[in-house]
Image (tube, rainbow, N blue to C red; front, top):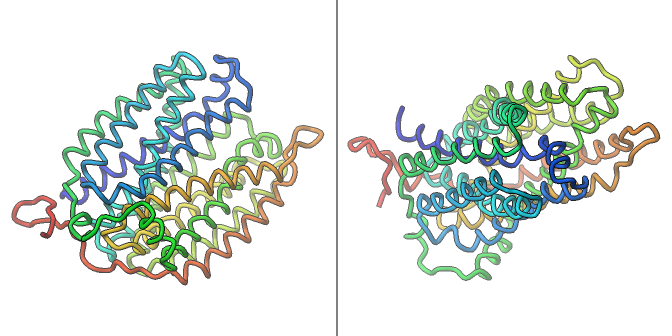
Length: 414
């Protein structure tokens, strides 16, 4: 296996751990509410604390990520994430767990921007779609393996052990970061003057192309996260799923996207980011419209539609990530992507909040107005297509870190 593939597998492993850490808390809700004797509102604080902490740290990261070696800062950030995960595993009460989740979110939020920055620095634009597809397949693996396995461990022991499992895995990934991610400093060398925080913000907000990229991120998050957080309760209260049968949705969707994500990456490199994004975004509105209008429905039919939702949602993210990454040049890629990551986290939180205001509980306990949320999500998704067509890739040259054929290692061109 060559150095580039080892690098991408390392980034995918980082992404996998971060995603499982974020996702695992939600299905552990019944255990935690019983153990700590907390209300649904207090449990909601546990979930949202991670997202808002990630958004906050990503915003601050915009001011510092481009000042350091990518490898060095990834080591420190992931070490902080490891400590936060250990703190979650050892939390004796609700307050300590809440603090631990905030710590995990602060460091976990920075990993997303760093992963995209490293891909942008190392992988040329013509192969960036395939790289994004491989790294984003981590979400699929997390859905198929990570979350169900963590829940299985929790059922045999208690809620602490999934976090202990993640902490052990994080130690292995720390070694992989040290071993397989090269020193990447070209972005530092290209900065003649170190920008102040105000200059960083002005550089992003004053760039129309990057603002269109950020607007695309916001629109996609609003369109998706008005739907995703309420799929599980809707399936149980309206469609007739049991809580156990909910795992079929995530396992089936995740299993298919393990294979379709790299395939979409290859299509992106072959046919172009805009064309593949348009196709998958257009197809994505079909399962959104159907899912939000389901009544009592047989499980196989629901799994067919929900799997289509997973596949098309992931399919539009791969070219979108490659497109957005290409709007920043190497000297400010980290700060822009960190800024974009902060907006992404906050937009996801806003979408869930707005959808919660629209939804209501019916007389029989069913969710009401989910179809209204679906119609809004369809409109927002359709608006993403003309917006994406106005975004231009400015980084189309060779990467500043290349594979030295003689030494078989990744080195700076300089």
